[in-house]
Amino acid sequence: MIGYIEGIVIENSDRGVVVLTKTGIGYLIATTRNTQERAKVDSEIALWIHTVVREDALDLFGFITEEELRFFKMLTTISGIGPKSACNILSLADLHTIVHAIQGGDAGYLTKVSGIGKKNAEKIVLELRDKLDNFAIATSAKTTSVETEVIEALEALGYEPRATREVVRALTRETLTTQEIIRAALQQLGK
Image (cartoon, rainbow, N blue to C red; front, side):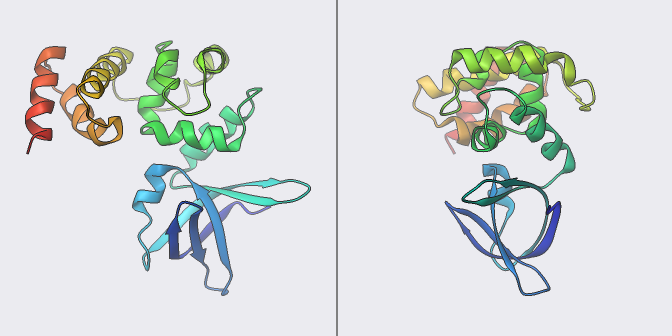
């Protein structure tokens, strides 16, 4: 079982990242969008690995932090959530935002993931809500619902949720109303 890989990124594509180790072996690793954005070609990377062995394949899923890997494994214990769906869920936002959404019972937040319908989202919330106390979270569940509301408002105005998420996350840390956050986000995104 492969648990950790360190090496140089030699490819970063839709297939995943290929990491060349010091032994000369290149591993194709499926990652979240956030990890893929950090994985620059010709730069060093270290990933925590989850190995999935099937009859016809050996798939590797890689994560920057051990905490992401633990959460990924928790997701895959839920019936109907496979490794690819779990990776897509972790690609939705940073881990803490996703954990907040689940702890706050915000199943609607998870339905933004391709392949995760209302029933699966509710199942994730139901099964994981009380198991997430081990994840150190710095903000409140209220922040996630405000963040979700602002992202949905910006999405209705034509902005991509992926592009607005970081701006909105930074603004929700300040003590602003939802409308003030939307105005400030529009100003920043309009630059």
